[in-house]
Amino acid sequence: MNKLAAVVTAIALVGPAGFAQAQDYPNAPIHLISGFPPGSTADISACVISAKMSAILGQQVVVENKVGAGSSLAAAYAARAPKDGYTLFVGSAANVINAAMTSNLSFDFFKDFEPVTLITSTPTVLAVTPELGVKNVKELIAYAKANPGKLSFGSSGVGSSTHLALELFNSLAGVKVTHIPYSGSPQVVTDMLANRIQGYFSPASSVSGHIAGGKLVALAVTDAKRSVFFPELPTMIEAGVPDCESVLWFGIEVPAGTPQPIIDKLSKAANEAVKSDDVIKSLHGQTVATIGGSPAEFARHIEAERKRWNGVVETAGLRK
Image (tube, rainbow, N blue to C red; front, side, top):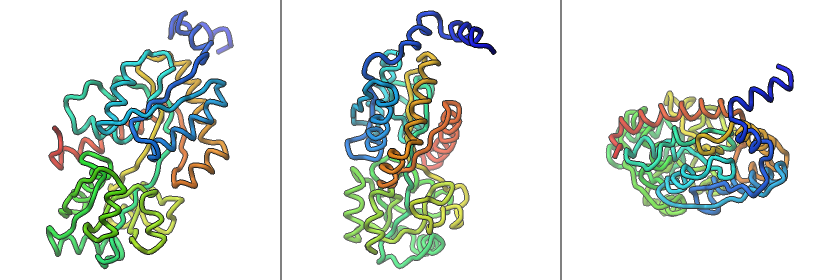
């Protein structure tokens, strides 16, 4: 297709106004809506990558934190925003889980947003207390089966990714570890260090220091492949629990109906950002891996996550 034909095709797809809008984009600040608090892994990812995208696009990309309802508050706000590329959303595993668990959301995460780029992920580490005396996942499962009702694992809240990782483990390993919900990772780790609970499927950043100091024991990661941050740890699959995969991921999305040329321009900028050496260095120092990829690849990832967490929620009887 020659250049003129490409232009004609683009105009036909998005309309003359949409094409002109895309050609001029961006000519004002862009707002990236995050449903997570400042200092969280999602917020760190958004801030580092948005700063780089600002330089690439020539317009400021501003992170706005709208915290509440496990990121659903932010999602509802972003879903209602104009479809002009000036309001972006930090989509995550939390949104897929919320959709699986809650039947009365005011928006449809899968229909009201279009994927742009999968930007980052951080490992989930299965950590336990030293007092438990288990050295690997096989021993943990054996202990749980021999001592029903005695194991308690924390999570950062009912319906959180850390909660669903535990429910997935319970289902696949054939055990029943008691779930204790907290309001966030710091509270979970505090009670683990005091030996009031025995374990946690934790974001890596919350426990890495305590693992290095010998105060907690890491048994495995829940990624599909071994983590570059913990290369010595097996995956849950390698440890003998097939299909036990739970990844804390974050990506950029836009309201459905945003012109494709704008999506493509944002995706190009986001991919350039996540591949830049300074962004990689900054995020890797906080146990956050950069990813990247096309909108289509991100869409396939979301669909795979949808199937996984729908199954877990149904098995655990968690749908509200």
